Image (cartoon, rainbow, N blue to C red; front, side, top):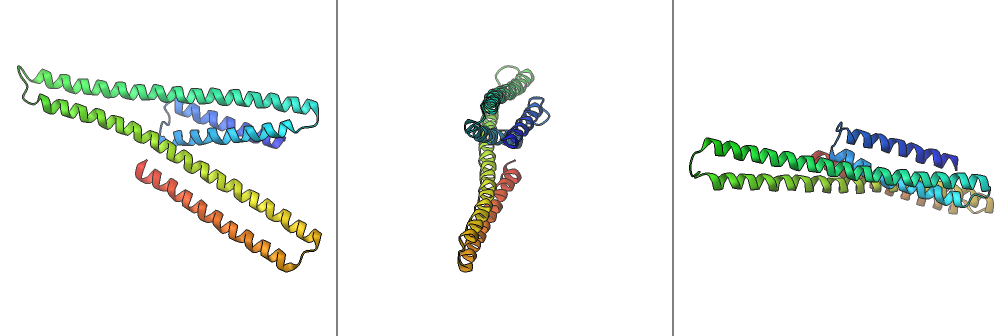
Length: 220
């Protein structure tokens, strides 16, 4: 149980470090935002696993200590989620403010150069409207990229977890087979089926990495 606690603690520290980098403006890319979103999900699963293990603890003192740690993990996770959403809202507001100031500056510069009626005013307004639509499209694309990257990273983590489970299951099956004295044909069948599952895992892993590369290369 201590190993699971240490694992969740490391995830929490790494997540906080990414949040600080994002908040400081050192890295506000869509890739980091997607990584943070995926880290939230991963930490949530680790906390749930630790919580389930703590509830099955027989020693009262250890159980109480573990449940206290679970409560703190959940509070910290909620605080980090709120911090992340707040930072995203602030940065989005700043982008909109900068876009608005840029549009006003261009419009003001155009008006100062022309006296009386401006025959190009409809064209200038069309440019401003286009710029606003372009800004909205960029914001929407960033949000979609965050979602795609988060889903791909979650899929990669799930594939890794399944591979680990398959390895443990293979070992248990072979140990049980040896204990029960099953034939070598049965053991070879188990090994062959495990090898097939391993190839499925590697193919899924390759596809996931390819999707992540394509998102980063063409949409990043």
